[in-house]
Image 1 (cartoon, rainbow, N blue to C red):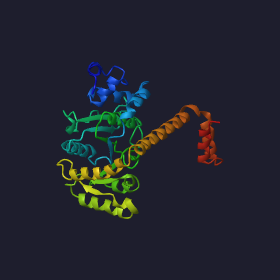
Image 2: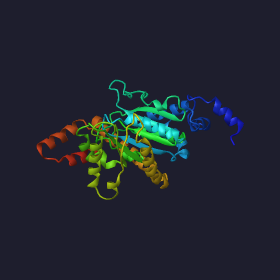
Image 3: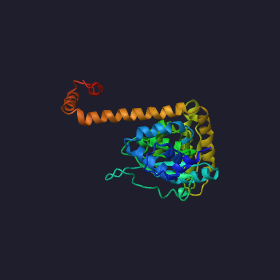
Image 4: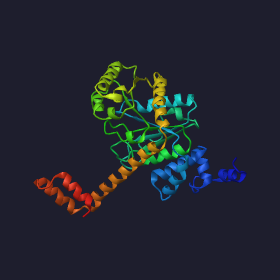
Length: 327
């Protein structure tokens, strides 16, 4: 039972206060939208308080199922996510959404803003949507997405949906972050199905042909089934579903497939799932440090190595090791 004084402190707390205080964490865990939004802003901006905030969230993590949605542009990812939210809410599941959008070349912010087309989130306290800029990461995610997953997880959302930017087969970082990976395609996308075979197809737990009421939907579905048939073992058994997000057709089947796979993942416990996301953060941070060293610290040394490569005196991998050694 919460002490009356603690309740009074929680009521008087504001998002501008110390977000790591017990009162603020209590408000976040109660899904107070102001506190959830304030915590996400801290995590996205990497303010000096981020370390303390993440530490305060740790005891409350690992309960949410993280679903990653990815696929080529034009597949209708946001519309399908919107339809799935309606189904999840009908099943009394609370939902947090991280919608990764292209970055504005001017501000660096998310171009599509608040994702106004996700109408299922409007006026629903059980849904929280946050747009997040990709910040130029070719894998479709920025490391901020993983930190924001922690905020939504701590806030007690049952499901966290991560919708990535939609840049094709490069968009595979979601495989390192999500518990269930849903790869979406649609009829009429031309060579994107072929591209998926060498990229996104490899990471899918569930394949979806959206816009199933359009001509060519069945052909696209059969193409995906055929692509899976040449794979070995469990990889050949990935479910392939057809949906029409605008009408809701097939979305209940998608929900059932997600929970069938997600239930097995959740049963394995939280440690490995969270460790996988931590490994992703470490790898991203290391890559960023290497890139920064090359941009700012290599100088004429980098030019010298480039000249040696052009002359044939030095292999590229040897030049890379030279830069990384820092000698």
